Image (cartoon, rainbow, N blue to C red; front, side):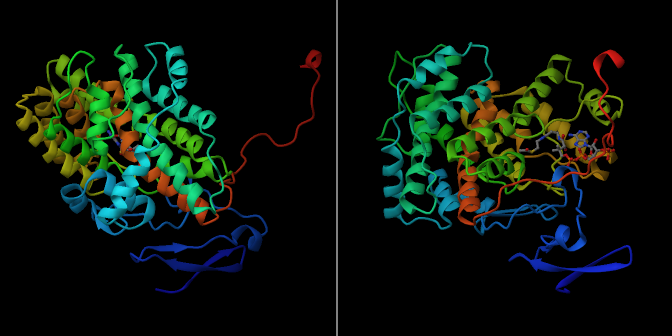
Length: 428
Ligand code: ACO
């Protein structure tokens, strides 16, 4: 591989360094392009070809269907690790030993009380409010209650901000769901492990003792691991770019939550289930919806299909499909929605339109079926995604600040009017 790339414009040649990542990915470093060429920029809508940073957190190969956190494969982590270990791994770069893990958990628990006044903000939301909007607002509001230090050079201040949000975020996630359901707002139970505690906070009924269901806890643990990080996706890039202005951790996370909400990103898990329900209500004719998805005059897309990076298969979808089967069997649930999903997947995988465009089920195609089996309301699905993605966002924010990345500020190619003189209103 040559170590330089040459660009020729108007007979002038410019050389740019070629940089190679640890997984042999190749990039052309165009940092000096504008200054060297007197103002020429690149244009790349949707950043399909643009690396915004160097990162040591997550590696994915969309062609081969590989996803690794800090070098560990997603398959192995989903099978053998717990979410809390994966949180530590993503944020601090190594799997913790038992002592470090226990200390980390203890530190998170020491931050697991949320100021009771936050409930007043929650109370002001109408019951109809979408939980993602509420979650984003409450995460932002945390800044007012716990002004986060931006002294990122201090190990202690950074650690403190991280454990604070890891302690409080599950509480506000559970509050967004319980508020909507008219249930009293719970605090956590420090005797439980991280995911058990989340499950209890979400589902505990006020009139009886809560009994843990290990099947449900394990399934959620796995789902959260699968959602942990996914390198420079839309919400993560949002977190990094917000933080690049040196805005604090919590507000950067709040902006990531907003980006995740959209149906082309995290909101797809809600959209998938609504689509499957619509197909069921319509009589279950998957062919009709396949035809709609392929019709260029119809805005309908097969939700849960396609991915910006995976053009072979999404390794998370494979794991989730098996997990959905197991969970439904373990809980003794027969869900016709799962059959519709499997039928749709089979048809799409054999259909030239989807095959040619390399459209495969993504992580969200089956996750909604698992959340539904757990009794989580449809509009909470993306909130669950945010819960899983939280460590990834934190890790990326930390990396961005520690690497002292410059403020994120893309250029543009202006295509509007050229100069024209102002015309007073009575002369227009
Ligand atoms: N159904 C039907 N056609 C599709 C779909 C789909 N789900 N996804 C892509 N296509 C088609 C496009 O119409 C386009 O066709 P064309 O070449 O004939 O114009 C082609 O496939 C390429 O699609 P793009 O939109 O250019 O691909 P891009 O990489 O920009 O988008 C995305 C990826 C947003 C995920 C897209 O596949 C999509 O909208 N999928 C449905 C929503 C979804 O499931 N999102 C979750 C993604 S995973 C996540 O964020 C966790």
